Every structure is written in structure tokens, then in C-alpha cells.
Image (cartoon, rainbow over all chains, first blue to last red; front, side, top):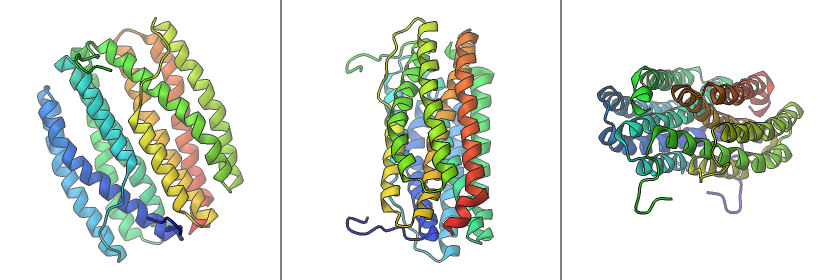
Length: 167
Length: 167
């Protein structure tokens, strides 16, 4: 985008750009989760990742619904943030020798992903409301609620067993 | 690190690695904040970034204190996550034509940074406690509290004026 012009002219443009950013991110997460599932040892963690893979696919459908509600093309823009977060997750996982320590590292990596999504959906919900698109805000809020619930579940898995086993 | 061996053998290694990751991140944030200060138009936002620059420098000192308390060398490891988050912040800011839309974009970018720090400090506090290092946990908790307070302030700036002006 934009070698000679600035492509984001209005607040609405910024909203759509950020929608395309999280759309790219969710699609990358769908690709990354199977590896995390295969690396996890703790059965609750493995199952949690599997559940979240299903949720993420549904979140992508909700985003496509928001694009349509807002009358813009369903498309993605590059999101260096999620690329960096997932690259770091892979690098750290590749450095860990012990399976139980790896589970703790996988939870931390997944929580970094969740927090990225939480911040983006939080922003998008606020912007949609400001733009008078309460209909879009309400769909985006469903994704936000799921990401927050996933983060809480990961916290609980970490503190109720995974960290203790890793230590 | 580690072409032939896995460098993270124990839970303690993972804790130290993640400490070095956030140490790198905080140092990158200190470098990025002056640009965000110069780009911000809203005076409360500009002042908020200035305050946070001071806090970030103090957070780096607290991290150095934790390295010493834990008896390990103060050092950084590359953190592709923060590099990606900051790269995205720069790219988006470069695409925005209008100053008031740019303020909204800067808040969103800063909140992505805050959420990365919140997730890492949340993890480090839990791991420090699991390792029996309540002394380290207590210092890391101070950084976590500051990041959460900054995120709340950014939310308030966005919803109490910046988003309305941008729209």
C-alpha cells in the first residue's frame, strides 16, 4: 500500500484497515494452532488449543460478516505484529528441551496471541460504536469476549498445574 | 542461540529467557516513544506518552534489579514480537493522512504495546512465584501494575475525546 499517497484518509478507513489486520491475524492463528496442538503434552492444554481452533474459525466468519455489514470487501492486510508474535512463539518452543517446560512456554505464547487479539478487538469495538455501527460492534464484541475467556482459561491451566509440573 | 542444542532446559531457564525478552522489548519501546510523542497532536496524549517514557526507563531499572536478585547476567534476547508490533505501529502511522485520525491510530498502537507487556509481566509474575521468587514477583508486579494503568489511561483518552475528534 501507499508508496506515494497515504491510504488511510478517514477514521472509517482506519477502522477497515484494522479489521483487515485482525482478519489476517486470525487466518495466521488458524495455521499456527495445529503445531501448538501437536507440541502440547498436558491433555487439558491440548484440548484447550483444539477448542480454540474451532472458535478461531468461527471468529473469521464473524469478521467476514462485519465486512459485509459495513459494505466493504473481505480482505487482509499484512500484520507484522502477529507475524512477530508467532515467530517468537516458534523460536522459543524450538529452544525448550523439556516437555513440561514446553507446555508452560506454549501457554505464555498463546497468551501473547490472545492479548494481541484482545487489544485489537477492544479498539475495533470502540471505533465501531464511534462510527455509529453498533451492529458491527456487537459482532466484534463476541470475538472479544471469546478471546478474553480463552486468556482466562489459559491463566487457569498455568496456575492450576502446568507451571507446577514445569518447575 | 542454539543451533545444535536446546538452550532452555529448565523452568528457571524459561523464566530468565522471558525476562531477557521483555528487557529487550522495554529498551525498544524507549527508542520508539519519542517518535510517538512527536506524532501525537492531542496534548493529553502527547503528555501521556511523555509520562510513559519516564515510567519505561524506570521499568528497565526494575528489570535490572530482578536480574541481580535472581543472580543472572543483565542481558537481552531478540524479541520478534515487539519488533513486529512496533513495525506495524510505524507502518500504520505512515499511512494516516489526518492528524486526528493519526491520534486514534497512535492510541491503538500504544495499546498493542501495552498488551504485549501486560501478558509478559503477567506470565513472569506467575513464574517467579512458582519458582519461589516472591521477591522478584513483587518487583515485576510493579511493572505490570504500571502497564495496566497506562492501558486504562489510553482507553480513557480514546473514548473521552480522541475517537470523537477522529470521526
